[in-house]
Image (cartoon, rainbow, N blue to C red; front, side, top):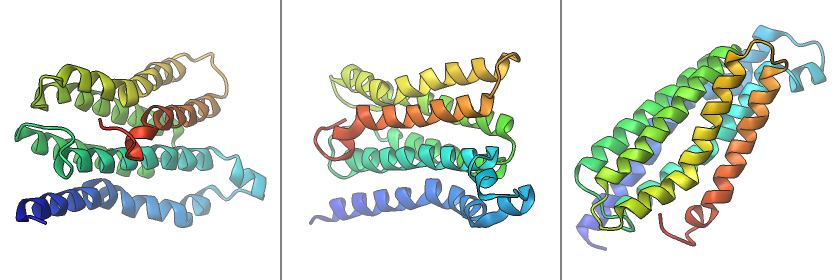
Length: 208
């Protein structure tokens, strides 16, 4: 294995660990080890299971898993296997976006008990991700840049955009009942749609 390949693999390993996992991990760990339980004091198991906080925790995990999976596979395809030829500026952009998303996940965990703030931050996270996907048109060093960007947008951007629109509508229209359950349900659907679109890419059956 050449030195350049070792450097690329080391780079991707570092980006995998930080910032997505490091920035968000500590706060998420504190939530999952019972901090929200001590504040809400639910009286029964069913109160815990169906509380707004529990739905937010499940929704947060359902979002982080495909985000982390997608980021890991994208970094590997871009900087290790070279399935995507990118300009030198792409690394700085990718790092910045991962840092911003990691910070967003931290604040999602921070506001895990406030479902309104939680979902506004989640929407902001998805908007950042959509913006990043669109910038890949300018960072790919290939004649097929347009088709690659369209493919990324279909896999990740379309589910994100749909959730952003639906989420804003639900949060903005006052007459809608059970907003937390609707937002949670659509969030689970968004993650399922993400995996349906990206399954081949995540499990090395196709390139970006």
